[in-house]
Amino acid sequence: MTGSRRLIIAVDGPAAAGKGTLAKALAERLALPYLDTGLLYRAVARRVLDHGEDPVLQGEQHAKAIEPADLERDDLRVPEVDRAASLVARQPAVREALLERQRSVGRVHGAVVDGRDIGTVVFPDADLKLFITASPEVRAQRRYRQRHGEDCQDAELLAQEVAAIVARDEQDASREVSPLKPADNAVQILTDHMDAESVLDRVLTLLQERRA
Ligand code: DC
Image 1 (cartoon, rainbow, N blue to C red):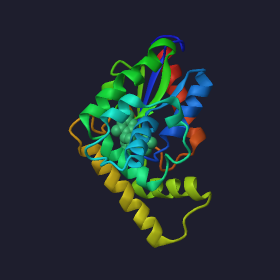
Image 2: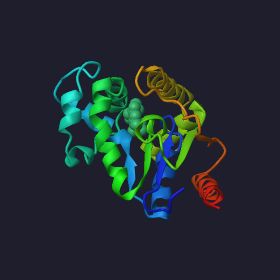
Image 3: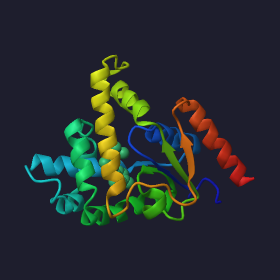
Image 4: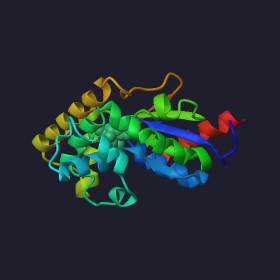
């Protein structure tokens, strides 16, 4: 493994498993850029929806045209974009159009890269590959907390959230190109009973062991 200069750490896994929290903290700790690749798919989806187009069919032109301002919008993490991003992400042409953009970020300075196919496709030679998971129930509760700032007490609402998460997992895992799956040499971490700090500690220990 190289020093932390051009280190590439791939952080893959399903939605709301704790990838983003881990990847951000890890990037800060290692003084590496953080790249949230889900944001790229969300920005493509947002543009498709804004143009009244179909996220099943359209997206390639938008993927090629994304600008920094598209990634800074405050309406990228809403349910309609959750659904549409998962649909545009199934299109091979969209994935292809976003590939080089992702690689170029990591190439120069290294990066902690959060996504679904980072260890399998985007950076198959990553120094460390992590696959972060949690049960759909735990992820639904986390997602709710992120959006509303408190736990969900309504069982029916929580069940709907679980169903949406399971549907999106299926969509992400069943697509033909770059499906959501752990890379062969990924370290899998189940975060159901771990808080953010213990996940980070676990990964830092892992890095130290690898460097030793
Ligand atoms: O991580 P996220 O929930 O913000 O991702 C949004 C969507 O983009 C999600 O449906 C999965 C997809 N995605 C992908 O296919 N590949 C990536 N590298 C990152 C996200």
